[in-house]
Length: 140
Image (cartoon, rainbow, N blue to C red):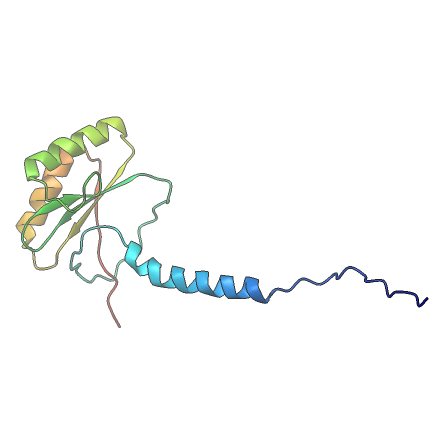
């Protein structure tokens, strides 16, 4: 009787299916990443200023003003405009809860200077120690 060939266990892993899955996931994340932007769409003015050092774990409050003079905050429902008096009250409460929070203003470049100063004055009256402005770097 002929001796039957013994099958030895195969010690190779077929990685082709793993590469296919990885490439599909890569395409999904590349398509989904631009859709995950947050905030209000504001046409920011260009300025050649240095970036503000903000730690990702450090809390930041952003108040936005659109071209139609409507105010938005990055807390709660961002898509709903907020009256200026309500902005002051909410900022006061947030600062009382967290005195070290950074307050930033994001304003449309078509706004007049007085509206921005008025908002910054309201924020400082509400207790913000300093108010920063968000700008876009100049396009070259």
